[in-house]
Image 1 (cartoon, rainbow, N blue to C red):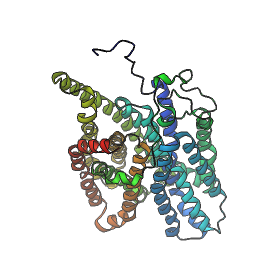
Image 2 (image 1 turned 90 degrees about the horizontal axis):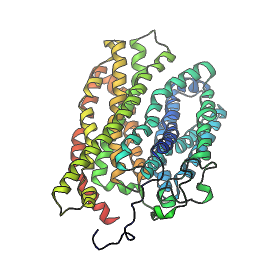
Image 3 (image 1 turned 90 degrees about the vertical axis):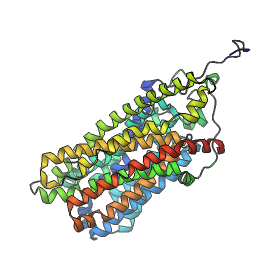
Image 4 (image 1 turned 180 degrees about the vertical axis):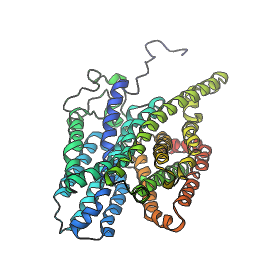
Amino acid sequence: MAGQTSAEVRPEHPYSIYTRNEKWIIVTLTAVSGLFSPLTANVYFPAIPAISRAFNKPVELINLTVTMYLVLQGIAPMVWGTISDRRGRRPITAACLLILSLSCVGLALVPTSDYWLLMILRCVQAAGSASTIAIGAGVIGDISTREERGGFYGLFTLGPMVGPAIGPVIGGALSDKLGWRSIFWFLTISPQCICLITIILVLPETLRALVGNGSIVPPRIYRPVFPIIGHGRRNDTSHTTLQPVPGFRNPFRLLFNIDILILLVANGIICSIYNGVIATISTLLGPAYPFLDETTIGLCFLGIGGGMIVGSSVTGRVLDREYRTFKKKEELKVASNPVKTQIESREEDFPIEKVAAVPHCSTSRHMRSIWVVPPETGQSRWSVDFADLGFISIAVMNATSTLMIDLAPGQSSSITACNNLIRCSLSAALISVIQLIINGIGVGWTFVLLCGVTLISVPLVLLAIKLGPAGRSRRRKTS
């Protein structure tokens, strides 16, 4: 710049000191920790009849423990996510996993004469497990830029979304062979403790208010036992600046932003219908295919998991590609109009809403192909539709979830907690009535109805595109 000496020009410090591979390791660890929220919820379903017999309670009362789990699953991240935005990701993640492990031990040992204790422990289990999703989203916001965030978020959501697919498989097999208590011993001993120990040993703190771009060494409690990730690149404070520790931000205030609220509802609609469909799989497949037992019905969920794995990877790449495409277009506009600076184009005018809308709208149009096929049309057809269900659902949810992180910078965990609250609330509402709808209008028309509901999300996203830039500008001025 004219008038400046070379000594006055400082090189731009990197957003994060971590290499691409190190970022993938961090995101993988957070994805694994996020797996336990839906896994602990869905692994429980096949064991409900056995638990009902063991506690000598009607199934309706055992189902009440599922309802309470969903309630805490929606509320707890609002607390833990907000705390992690202020106090750090690493200790809160470890604390949540510890609470989850202890609750699983309690559930494995709970006396069958104490139904009230079963209810309380399920609430504690939900409070520990559900919060890891919101915290994990905060980690991604800490270490990634917009250019790469779509791919990372695609991997991260594999954990939370594959859990409902593999949970019934694991729960059905364990309950059938080893009894219902083995489910909770499995959750305690195998993946949960391994994940907790790994986080304590190697996961670095990423909250930018504590470590900047990772260069600053935080207090001891925030440091891993073996600081392997980012080794040799810390303590160079000339390459980073600490963001101020945010004051308490009520996460519920995010719901008063109309553009964010619209996206939350759109995301919640898709998630609730996804959960509503998988909740009916066992009851629909059983009568349609009498030769299937509980174990083989559980295996049918693997089609959904496979679709999610593919959909998550593809959507992440699409989001990153669309971001680069739109960015090039904006740079061309800036080059042709010297009045605008690059910063103005990036912050004020960059159409981030349109980037996320591409996979959302394109996939939502095809959802009709998976809803209108009742089980009577054949088992092979169901397998294809299950894979489509997983692929399309996660594609839409990843796109809107990634966008919401960009819309509320510095509040990644809080926005994800709000997202979780809306999704859990709508899912619980649909699950509570979907069997009544099926009984009333039949399987085929129920899925046609669900098809129509999913299409509501398309105009909602288009509305968010229109209102988003003004909302982002208003939040920057008031922050």
